[in-house]
Length: 253
Ligand SMILES: O=C(O)c1cc(C(=O)O)c2c(n1)C(=O)C(=O)c1cc(C(=O)O)[nH]c1-2
Image (cartoon, rainbow, N blue to C red):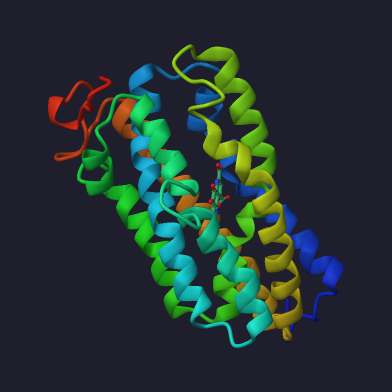
């Protein structure tokens, strides 16, 4: 290999990005295979929902950060829909509220979930790294790091079908978060893909876009590694939620 590599065509860049997803997206992680095939215990599903609340809660903060960095009204108009999806347009609405309905149904008190005091250290580090990446890197890298959403409609379909078939403690109602996501994710991913392809104008920028997606796959993967170690292999880090912990339980528990 010598010299500078050639600029990729739009089609080639898109193919490279899809290849990253095919090789690294978190649908391939053993924790997800276990979750979707009915292999998780009730406590493992509780731990997954508790930890993922932190990801959900930080997504609008990440998106607000990106919003401040987009320079055109049209781009901001598109991007702000992401914040509205998660926060809702009024109280009692939105993705975060729907996620809390899931953690309610799994016996957690809302105060405990929202405090995030029981999440795994690696969940916090991974999610915070994602927010920081979107603050500190170039805007096109920040936008490209959301491109895992190209692959999320498939995993969500698999997850909802698998969980409904295998666990009697979840229902369409408690998994309602996921019923809204696929069309939102598709809309967001189409915008992010067009933006990333359009704004990566040199081969070096195209490589940074690909790296941004690899980074984001690692953000998602490392959260599942941490869940596996703590709750499947029972190496729970000090301070993290322990199954049956009374202080974490809500009225329904
Ligand atoms: O259920 C999933 O597997 C999954 C994956 C992803 C993703 O690929 O990043 C997101 C979501 N869900 C999701 O619900 C969500 O709101 C979301 C926002 C983002 C993002 O990077 O801005 N990814 C995802």
